[in-house]
Amino acid sequence: MLINMKQLYTHENKMMVENMRNHLRQAGIEALMKNEFSGGGIGELSPLETWPELWVSNAEYSRAKAVLATLREPILADNWHCNNCDEENEGNFEICWKCQHSAAQS
Image 1: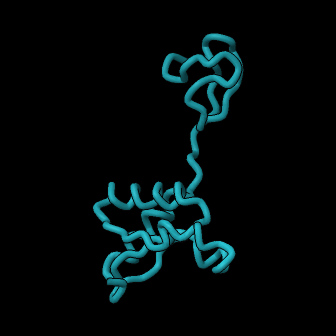
Image 2 (image 1 turned 45 degrees about the vertical axis):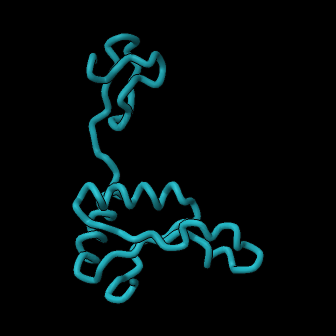
């Protein structure tokens, strides 16, 4: 089944791998997860051999790699001042860190 497929992503945390697979699905790319349930083999196997992995077809590899690369890019947004408490918040905050007032209301 892994013929004509390439490993795209691996991480020790299965939830991170699932999250990446969900982003790929949203982009219309199917990915196969390998080692999904191999965590119980730690001790018999090297821990790195038990990490969940995402595999995609060779044809989709470049596009899938680009999708995951966009997830690593920082979100650049201007800082904003809360209308409720006048605290300055970083642009990637959706609510004020001090009073929990929504940025949309500011």
